[in-house]
Every structure is written in structure tokens, then in C-alpha cells.
Length: 585
Picture (cartoon, rainbow, N blue to C red):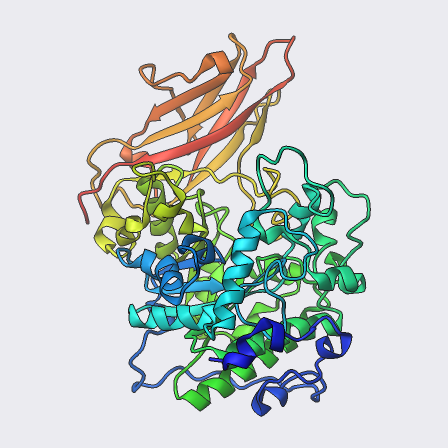
């Protein structure tokens, strides 16, 4: 832990915005790290990292079956005034009745850090005027803890270890949450009255204001505020050395100052690394940066006599990685990673987990699947169970829950939490995951929704809804796929599987035709027809268990007749496949 003087942000916090510091000059880090910083000769590829030996008794990457990601919210969840005990209870304490065995905490956000960094400002610290009480609360909580000699990251690492949890610290490789601050006008006078104050994370960091030349684009250019161009333009450009130094120095500081078990490089916050038209050709630049970070991790691990695992959260396929400048096969071949977290978690029912899990397995690198809050749990435990079974059946070894801290009681009135963290116990019950009832959903497109549009679509696996179903004048229908991991021929179901879809904008005499895996099926006339007053029409089908196969199952929909006064299409907006409880193989 830094001493009292170093922990005081008013005494030791570097004015890191100076170009000289960000260019990799004196950082106050130890000699081992300084030898790996900017100015060193171009590095040669590392030898393949060695796995921990038999004498290592701690958790290994393949042991992380349930991981909870968290951000700075423990600083808001703890009681006021801030205290070490309150912070530990607001972070680690909330996991005591769960099956989580690794806690991953983010060290940086768009507007700053939530710890005693010497290189980067505390969140809100360098903003001329704060627009929410929560920003002030978070900022002052960190400042007061640091002034008292208590670094929040040290407290959480120590608290996690006492609770039997491994703790990873997570670095956002880019973050453009300030774009939401731009959209709501944080740099302008507040709207009166304020009915929805800004989050602490929406402020523009000072380095972006002082060094716009480090960005991929022009933050002030006229682009639609949900477009890819708008979102990308506020991200740091890794082709620029000073920006790489900013990120590397923050990584090196974290690796040398804290008793962490692992360090995650989060490329999905946000997936803009280079200008998109040159991301592929710049991939070697990112690889060299990862080598530098790996060296620091290995040097620190050697000093303390136990490993620091290096992880990366990346897009779901090698091709998607390459499109944004990540050469994952090289990283695996050189042993730059100890584990990989796959995807942003928006498409848990269709993401092809197998490619990266198999590629990692060839190099002894386990792959975890990321599930984003509210996607796989839309139908409660049954849909979460389906997404988990599909991932584990594809070679995935664990699940990282993104933003699932919202399942903690702090975010709900008493008795109103729809799914608390006790659901994590389901994931370590292999029989329940395999044989329990499940609901496989159709993934929505990452291009839909104001928060997601323009941000993840270029790096996330595409969804299937919404989908236009056009009038079929040529016999061609529209098909969606339900990818399942259950084999009903080997495990007799306690009931019949059922398919369900919801379609909007359907005329009273329009005619649809449905087929399951090429064979016609008829809607169940006893099933709920939907809220037709809202033009929402539901169709449910009882399926023969023999017709449901492991892997992709195709539901085809044809619009055969359409009223001439209506546009020549309807829209499929949602769908699911329900699998009843299985009796076991």
C-alpha cells in the first residue's frame, strides 16, 4: 500500500496530463517497471508463459467458474462517511451468499479512477462543476480513503482474499461513456428541474479536452449521436504513442502496487482501438503493447513468488478480433494471456463460443463467456440455465457476469429483486445446468437501442431480432435458428418442448405459414394470442421431442397473404424455445 504521503491526492497526484509524463518519462514506478516503459528498444516476442507448477495451491484460470464484474458502485453502496469496513462490505460482503469465486473490479472509467492513482485523476476531481450528488459522493469517498492511507483497491484485494475470493483488477482499454455526457449536455447548464441527474461516469476526462489529437476522430464533428462515427470519434487512438503510454503506465502502476490475482484487459470498453479502416494493419502495435504489459506482470509475479494471471475480454471470433486490431492467435501462441473472456455478452444464445474455446485449449488457455446484465436472464433462471449450458457444452469453463451487481439488494426495494445473486449457485450444479428446464431465446441485434447503437455492432456477434418478414411472392421464407445444447433423444423430457414467437403489424386476414426444421407446424389454438389491441401477436407451438435436435433448429416463417393497404411485411420481434426438465441420460 502507498504510504500516507503518497496516498494523499493533494500531495502526490501527478499532473499526469503533462505530455512529458504521458510520453513515458518518470513515473515513480520501481526500476523493474521503468525498464519496460516507453523508450525501450522494440521487444522481441516473449516465450510461451509457463503454467503455475504443482506447488501452486491457489485457484487457476480454469477454476473460475462464476465471476462477477463490478465498477465503482461499491463507493456508493457503502454507508457514509466512507470507511475501509464499509467499502469491503459494499463490494466483497455482497457476495457472501453467492457462488462467485472471482471478483473483477474496474480501475478506470471515462471520467477518472476510483483509487489512489498517481497517474490518473479521481473520478470527478478535474471537472469544473459536478452535476450530480453521486459524483461528489464517489469522488470524496476515494479522496478521504486515500488521505487516510486506505487505497480502495488494496482494501478490496485484501477483503476478497480473506473471503476466499480471487480478485482481478480490470483496465478499460478505451472508454467513451463521456459520449453520454455529451448527449445530455454535461458541459452546459443543467436542465431545470433536474429529474435524472447524470451518472458519475459520464464526464469527459481532461486528457481528451487537452489532447484531441490523441483521439480517433473529432469529438465535435457533426455525426448522428447514435452512429458508429459519433461513438468512435471520442475514443483514444492506439496508433498514437502518448495514448499507448497513458494506458501502459496505468496498467504498470496497478500491477506493481496491488496484491491482485489477475489483471484483465477489457477491449469491449470500448471496442475502438484504431481508425476502423486501418485496425487490421495496426494489429502488431497492439500486440507489442500486450507484450510490454505481460513483462511487467511476469516481473511482479517473480518477485512475490506466485502468478499474476493476465486475461483479455475480446470479440467472439478471430475475425472479429482482427477487424478491431487484436491478433489473438499470436497472443495465444506467445503465451501473452492466461485466460480469455469471450464477447460483450449481448448475444449469449448465438455467440459461437467454440472457436475461441478450442483455439485457447490448444495453448492451455481457458475461455470464459461473458453474459451482459438482463440479456440471458430475461426469462429468469431458465433462460440463464440455457445460455450457460450452451456455453459449457462449447468448451467454455466459466461465466463472467457483466453488470450483474445490479442483482444486489442495494438496487431494489425490499422484496422487489427479481433475481438475486443466489442464482449463481445454479451454475456450479452441473446436473441442474444439464437437466433442468431451459428457455433458449432469440438474441436481439446489438444495433438496437440508443445505448448500443453505434457502439458494439462492429465487434459483437449479430442477433436475429427484430427481423422483417416480407410478403413471399416467390416461395422464399424467413428463418431464425435456435441453437441448443440438449439432446432429447438421450434424455427423455418431462413434457413437450414448445416454440414461441411474437410478431407485430399483422392484418386481420393476413396469412402466415410456419415450419420447424423443414416440416410444417401449426400454432396451438389454446395458447395466448398476444395483446392484439397493441398489434402484438403471439404464436406458440407444441413440438415433437424427436423434432428438436442438438445444435441449430430452424423456424421458418412465410407471409403468404398481406392486405394491399398495408406495407408488404410484418416484423418478428421476439422468440424462444422452451425445453422441459430432462430425466437424465
